[in-house]
Length: 239
Image (cartoon, rainbow, N blue to C red):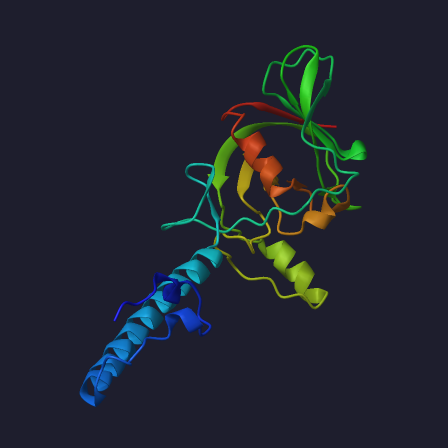
């Protein structure tokens, strides 16, 4: 008996695939049935393995590796998934803009009333980012230096903040390890000896608003860009 190759191209019965037993006796027919049963089992196994591979590939999740700044399929240890959401049309950042100033390159200038942060490129231009700022009663102005930089920082709310939030019925943890659910987001830039930071956020809808306790927040993808373009000791001016 010759088995038509077309038999393996479709799961549906095919008349061309029906073997002829006219030259076989009853014993030969039995052997042929056994052969076809084994072929069917092998074919089913091949299909299962193939479909399993396809579905496994479809379920793959890309994760952001903060050590390399790349999206990877195998995150390894110490990495976190980074949700990048479509930007609001009103939030156009980062972008290079005209910014005449006497500040040295890499200086960070924060204009709280405009909800904008500028990273000075040279004496005539800067990279502008949209930010969230301190709510009423938590605004501040002044100059500091970048004293520390952290990737996926842990969050330790100060006792005063925990007490204030508890009075409003919101219980804050004593400490939260870094990760996508952490309010500090993907990066934190610490300012002098203060408790203020420039950091990412797990609440992207707050960018452009005055909602924080004095820290400056950016979209995670924006704070990563800022983080990679500044150094310890760089000047930060809040005005």
